[in-house]
Amino acid sequence: MKSAAFEYSRPATLDEACALLAADDGARLIAGGQTLVPLMAMRLARPTRLIDIARIPGLAYIRDDGDAIVIGATTKQCAIEDDPLVRARLPLLAKAMPHVGHTPTRARGTIGGSLANADPAAEIVLVAVTLGATIVWRDGGKDTAVDASGFIIGPMVTSLPQSACLTSVRFPVWKEPKVGVGFHEINARSSDFAFVSAAAQVALDADGRCARVALGIGAATAYPIAIDAGALIGSRAEEQRVREAVDAALADAEMMDDLHASAAYRKRAARTLAVRAVADAYKDAHARRS
Amino acid sequence: MRVDLEINKQKHGVEVEPRMTLLDCLRDKLLLNGAHAGCEHGVCGACTVLIDGAPARSCLMFAVQADGYAITTIEGLSPGPGELSLLQDAFCETHGMQCGYCTPAMILAAHALLAKNASPSRDEIVEAISANICRCTGYAQIVEAIALAAERMRGLNRPQEPR
Image 1 (tube, rainbow over the protein chains, first blue to last red):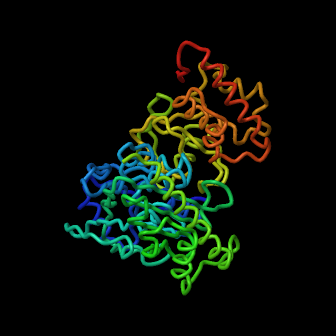
Image 2: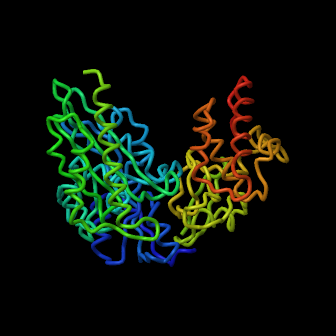
């Protein structure tokens, strides 16, 4: 369990990091390294060069942009978990964070690393897809912004070019006075990879009915997906409507199927967890003071 | 490559290959054998050290990444030569170990918890050690040890700090 040999660079700026990446096909970025290093130990990854971006100034921040919370790529997961701004304005991410790995991996792991790694079971990716976050990368001195759903294109596959460095993620903030969230996942033991996960955010109208609903399912398919929950608008989040929305979205989806959980199980669990997540979010929204 | 590490408040300059993990550097270069090599891919937690006070896997960090941080290993918790910290004592008293392989990491994880939270609930203790695998004890005595240490530390007039 020892990595193969590699060169190590720690550039001072982002553009320098991109230039190093562009110069060598075998080079990889490292920040927290909580997924990359195990892959290297198992020799499933053999980068020729590691470019350490963890200490590049200006890449770790949590900023309130009014209609969005913007988080810098190298912001540590533990910093997001403890952040009052995230808790107040991005409650779904706050709710999901304790499920991301465990305390020691969150102490090193970064938000950008989780997004760029795009594991089907990654909670951060699920929240980004569910809320329709925007991902920004730098390549050749210019910034490109893409929707999370256009960024994650396969299991551990993203549209990030080889010479690009993910720089930030922008999560839209819902302005409705009553917004609630729910998050559920099933795994063999807490902090292990999820077999299925569900994230939901609900905003209420003046009558206490759903004005806006975001729902996403993770770990069930090759990458987390957002579910069209339009049928829940104007409703009181009745269980049957949630079931139907999930069933419709997963009807033709290719479910993951492995030793831990069969495709049929994942489909059933996705429906159940979605019902629970929406019910929690609806209840949570009602409990908020406007 | 040369890297300057600060471990248990002492500076060490070491020459390492980039691929050498912090764990291997601690054990092989600095003879700090308290960090244990278990799975070497981030699953078992036996290699836990504190990085700026927070528990982290020393097998998931290369030594070349570790300069500039205050690193604490189990060797750094002892108040003096041949002495045990209050938390270490509690592990002995409650039989919080059997083979001892997971113990340094368990104690460091617990140390970090108690530094932040003087009165952890049982759930918080369980959560704090949930990243560390023990194949002997069934965890009950470990949880007991941490609760006992917390109770004793609350009785002290000062926070317990590693020297």
